[in-house]
Image 1 (cartoon, rainbow, N blue to C red):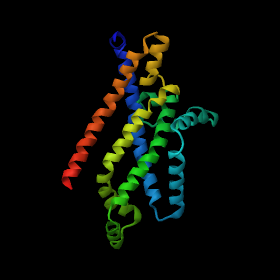
Image 2: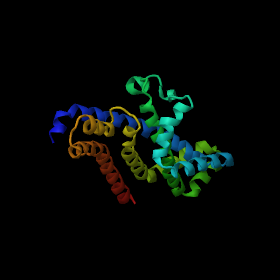
Image 3: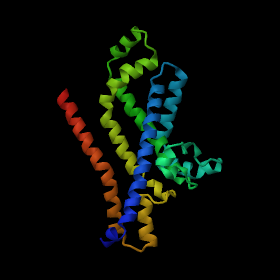
Image 4: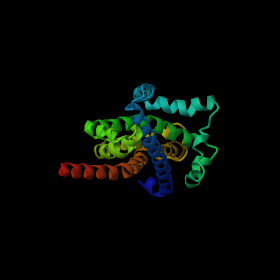
Length: 235
């Protein structure tokens, strides 16, 4: 286990790189997933068709393929994901502004993939809201978006917190693919660096990597369990 002590700074750096990827991808997927959920329940047929097509295609495509397209397809199309170089945000997350775009590619891949699952979790929550609630909103003259924002989503959120949390936990674990596609410094790439270039035994290295992912996922899982218990008592 000396590798964990001798390379503690490497593991810590890898942890924070992975944390940044997961945080940015979680925010992006929640925003895009909410928009997709609104499209899927929209009264406008083309929007419903577009939202349904997105979810159907992305949910049934392996994440590895999504990563491949982002890491190798976007450069072929002449893009280096500069849309993520957002002013102020790239000062907080300096890797967004570097000339090594694989950090941005990983965020895009995880965001695009996870958004489909976020959409379905939200849509299930919306479907759990009594139809009379939205009908009452329409009778008051609220538009579709006003009805969704002020009546439906606040009630649906109670039913979607735990499923959304499970989606985010799955996304954190999926982020391990980022290191295989060129993201320098994340937990998975750190393990490859230490075992291949450093010559360390793989078992303690991967124990350290697993501990990093557990630090990210276990507290979130415990929080979801507590929320679920409170919801059960409230019923």
